[in-house]
Structure formats: C-alpha cells, structure tokens
Length: 215
Image (cartoon, rainbow, N blue to C red; front, side):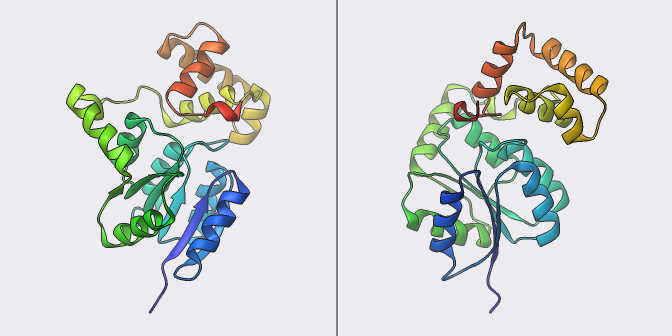
C-alpha cells in the first residue's frame, strides 16, 4: 500500500526534525522547508499528498503560501501546526482549504489523527481553537466572510517590508523593479491608512502576516 507523502514547512529546524521522527514509521516525509516561497517551489517539484505548515514563516507566511499552493495543487491536503491561537486566523486557514488546524502544544496523537482525518476528507481542529471559533462566530457571524483588500503581490511586499527587508532586496527576491516595490508600498500604506513603518509592522503582526519573533 502506497504511503502518504508529506512535506513539512516550518522555519524551526528542530520542529521539522521532531515531526519527521514522529511521522516516518507510518508516512513518507519527502522534505522540509523553512519559508513560504521555498514551500511553493518544493510543492511544485515534489507534489506532496499533504503539507504540514506553520503560520509564521519568513518571505511568505503560511496562509499566503497555502493560498498559492492550493491554486497549483488543489488536491494537496493542508494541516496547519502553529502557536497562533487567533480564531480569525484559524477561520481563514479553514476558509482557504485547510483540513486541520492544530497548536504546537497539542499531543502527538492529535497530529496523527489530523493527518488521518485529512486524508479521509474530514477536518480536524484542536479543541482550544474549536471553542474560540465558536465564540467568535457567536459574537460576529459575518466575520468569516470579510474580504481582504490587498492583492497577493501587495501581501508579499507587506510581509517583507515588515520583516525589515529593504525595497532593493524585495525587488531582487520578487524579480520586479525598485519602482514597482515603491509603488506597492505606497498603495499598501494608502489602502490600510498607515502613517508610519511602525504601524505597518503592527498591522502585519496583528493580522499574522509575520509573528513578533520574526522582527
């Protein structure tokens, strides 16, 4: 019987090593990556059955990486494994097609169960997150359907700016001109009504585009 092929995405090498050790008796771990952009390249090359991904990763966060990944490999199952307990983030993860959302404080058996559920097409959410989702929905049933106002390119630029990268460096990474990066920055500041770099960083943290430990 063919074993499920799993790709790991987390910028902490020890986390990936621990997950690999847990999974390898039952699954085929085909690789591990440390940032969202490398995840997209690796997924395109390796065609995993399932991806275990963190929210807070450099260059491209887990949410935005999964949005792009699901366009090219819609059949890939996604399980988020993160420290992020924000119910809005969990809701967005499920909305874009995740099969599971777990906290890194979860028991090992929960991750194994989430993978089994994902491959059967059944969602799995940690109990703490499930309770938070229910409370959030009761407070504001429309919150899950709110649209985002930035384009995918603007989100990429926003994340890298918030990580402290220069516009020249961003231009090189995205293979676009310096003027284009500067234009995107202006559009982002206008759209989000931000007046300073500090406000931009705070926005990125609040919306889980970066995590505080990334800066």
